[in-house]
Image (cartoon, rainbow, N blue to C red; front, side, top):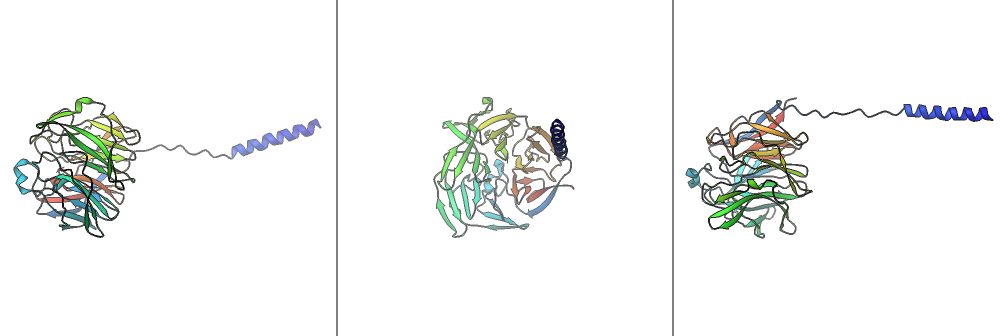
Length: 358
């Protein structure tokens, strides 16, 4: 009996050992960052004979739209050129323009996004000498071609807003003006979320961790104003707090993360590029890209830097083909684009797509 029990225990132990030996451990995966020197910029569209700074871009599932923009460049000596009252369509490498009777007075640096067959447009300025943007907000039905006046915007701003309508949320970063008196205002970056179904704006953001970046701004041109450049990766929005004048105010390279879940600001490593203004910002879903912009000498910059949110590290990538300022960056059909604004080739407007060498 003892022999039988001993044999049974040995068989059980042997079986367990054999089964344990069949378990395959998963291989260890190490993330290898994409090489920063293997990017190329491919020109996908160009039009000659015009400039389009101050243009706002909105992308639907099939079309990229542009709205507004100045006819000349944005320096005070060229403000007499006025603003464009037009909607542009960039589709299949072809750009078409149409005047669709926008009823608002603000025609540049507008809040502009698309939800299904509805366009939302509002705010904006009517010239580059305007002290602050208008507060009217409109909905345009692309099927019925009808305009509908919505509730006025609950804020004032002067510099271009940063708009994030992805992931079923419309989030807007406003360089908001708070007026101290008739001649003095404070500019601060404030996040809002818009609910199209209720036509309602909700404040999301709290105070910045560094109070010294809040500027007391004279509301007289040229003025100094926060001009944020921002990109989104999942539920975090990364913000470069450059200034509108490109002046040495100490905050042009301050870089932050804002968590949409926690509604909290976090200070990150400073942007390593030249202290400048009017840079573009866009994300490819993994990295953030900030580049171009206007140097103190008013030369357009070509440098582009990418930010790795996992390693919290900046790296320089391939230059833009031309110096570029007042430009926009956006995602369309899973690819990254930069364009519009002003570039080194006078009286031309271009759009470039970011690609990687295989």
